[in-house]
Amino acid sequence: MNTATDKAGFVKLIEENKGIILKICGSYCNNPSDREDLAQEIIYQLWKSGKNFNPDYKFSTWMYRVALNVAISYYRKEKKGPQLTPVEELHIDIIEDTTVDNEKERNLQLLQQFIAELKQLDKALILLWFEDKSYKEIADIMGITETNVATRINRVKQQLKNKFEVHKTSE
Amino acid sequence: MMEDKQLNELWQQYDAKLQEARILNLQSWVLNLQQFERLQKEKASRKLRGITGIKLLGVVLGLAWSIFLLFLVWHSLHWSRIFFVVSLTAIALITLYAVIMYVGHLALINQINNEDAVLAQQEKISRLQASTLHVCRILFLQMPFYCFWFITPEMLQNEWLKNLLITLPITIGFTWLAVWLYRNISVENTEKKWFRILFSSREWTYPVKALKILGEIEEYKRSVVVN
Image 1: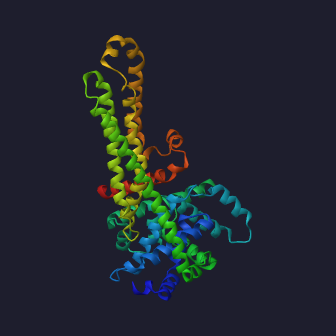
Image 2: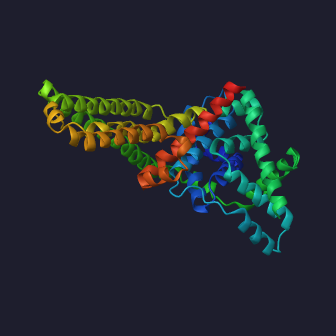
Image 3: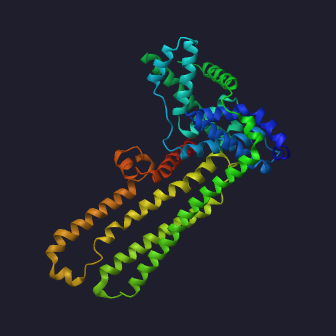
């Protein structure tokens, strides 16, 4: 990739796609310092792999592959495993926080929490679905069939919805 | 029940929040890429040397141990040492099998490429990291052979009661334990108490996590078949 091997072009590409990196890091690491570490690792791997990029493919597909592979590998390196805040504690924190739109903020935190609790591959899949990627592109990034993408995404969405439902009824 | 649209809206809000927050200073890292690259190269090469080094050490020690055992077997080929020959041969063969597995995994190290599709790439890395656990469960199969290598046919005749009451139950017990461990050291049991106790030390963290990801990959593959 000519643009990625030259630094200015690479800076531009990262700026344009930083949302992807931020969301992947946010979903795979709860701890802010781990999140920074992971983002650095992703940027380095993108920079390193840039010379192998085949311009016939979509840049975002290539970027997602590299970023998700680095993120899932990073999960294995984490010494303590994902540190999740129990939903109940999260709920108490939010109820006490009166400075924000409680309902909206609570749902946002729950969404982050529920995504963090997903299995590593399911997490990758739902991130791609949220990013409005077509089933074909998701299949290409993940290396599974489109039918499998559709089935798995429905299951993961259902899992997330159930978790919201259970939380709602437990309130 | 929440609709897809609501889930999506929540995600958009999360996205907007992340963009505002600017948690990560991406641009400064990119501008310092050269320095960063040097540090990362050093880190990566240290890690790779670590994995390769451990596996190479395993291969060398395993080979040396097998050769030593087979040397002893070669010089003991006599009916009076039948138990010694059988148990040492079995231990040597199991060790050699583990060595072959390690060699296969060393070859996998060179195939790692982050640009591959996620499932294929994660399978390679996870197999590599979980290999230590697989080798460990194979090596457990040696246990019963350590229980009777010292027995001779004369001992069986002269001390049959002692062997019947002590050696036989111990050998049966270790055989059962070895087979049980071989069958149960698997992804389905990673959350069980005995598994966590057995593999609680720090060096088992990566292999156990890798085993869990392999379980997820298998689940994905099964879905393909079902579909």
